[in-house]
Amino acid sequence: MLEQPMMDKLAAMRLHGMVDALQQQHKDPGSGELSFLERLALLVDHQWNWRQNQALARRLQAAKLRGNACVEDIDFRAASVNSNWPTLMLCLGPPWG
Figure 1: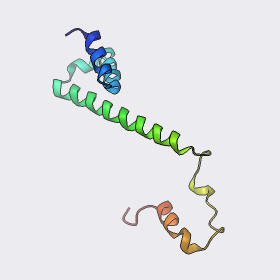
Figure 2: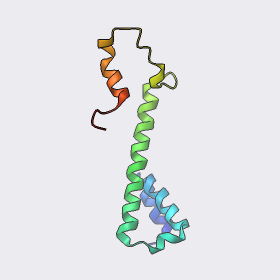
Figure 3: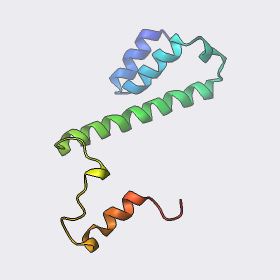
Figure 4: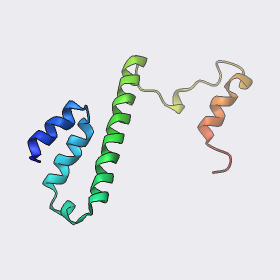
């Protein structure tokens, strides 16, 4: 199968991440040393990550956040300690780690 028609078919199936990964593999001379399954796994992983990143970007855009937030910006004096306890525990991390 010719390369460009295959790329067009992947794009038509909305596998844009796989198209990107295939183009990257085509440019990388070291990818020829990988087995078929290893190259296929790289393509699938790239497609999976691409979709996850697209979904995250869509959710972030829909959330309409008003700027960058960080743990240091939380004002724990504003309310009682009991209402901020879950937030404080998330900031400290898991108790087993």
